[in-house]
Amino acid sequence: MDISTLIGLAGCMGMVGLGIITGGTGLLTFVDIPSLLIVVLGSYFALYTYGGISTGLGIFGTLGLTFKIPVHDEKGIITRLMAMSEKARREGLLALEEELEDLDDEFMKKGLRLVVDGTDAEIIRTLMETELNQMQGRHAGKISSVNMWGTLAPGLGMLGTVIGLIGMLKNLEDKSSLGPNMAVALITTLYGSMMANLLLIPMSGKLKNQDGDETKVKEMQIEGVLSIQAGDNPRILAMKLLSYLDPGDRKSVEAEILKD
Image 1 (spheres, one colour):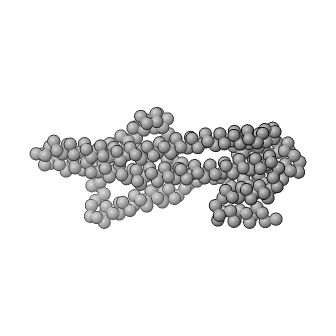
Image 2 (spheres, rainbow, N blue to C red; image 1 turned 60 degrees about the horizontal axis):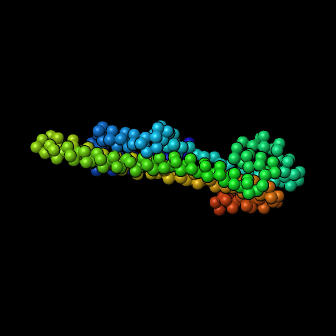
């Protein structure tokens, strides 16, 4: 589990709560059921209009991805590709076929299968990049749905504010209704802002970062597959793939892989 998401959520909510308490206002003052219904459920059901039933039902699974740590194992990928490159140079590309059965990564497995089958390099690149683009498209759709919810929540908050103000202005003579109506007017705006800025926008950013990390790994695999087909020296292949890593990670992995 990615505890950074929990730390972020707990820290944000904690600081807001602490600010409320130290400001001399009780937390219960900021609990208003009508405001919650307008902002949370109103903005949620608006997602069905935006993206259909699949988007509405799938949004919670999408948000759940921010609590998981994707495991890409760049070092393992580089090591495996180096071993395959060495075997291909020594025994030929057809010798890689027996290695494919033990390969768990379907993306890399499909690319190497094309290499073993003697497919042209440009065709391999096109096919693998097409699959990569499709993955990015799926990720973009999920990120867009979270962004949309982050846009809708403050909008519904403003709508709740208008509702509260209308109720207050229509009943100015009834002083007992001024407080509840003003509470709805202000608290809905607060709820909408909190949903967007404490929850949805940060989660959308994390999903975008995860997409970038997975894209980088797949680009690295494409480069490795094509390098094997081209017959590159394993060390040259490793240097190509190491360039995809961050400088800090690159040094530690390089020291381990290229130590001989």
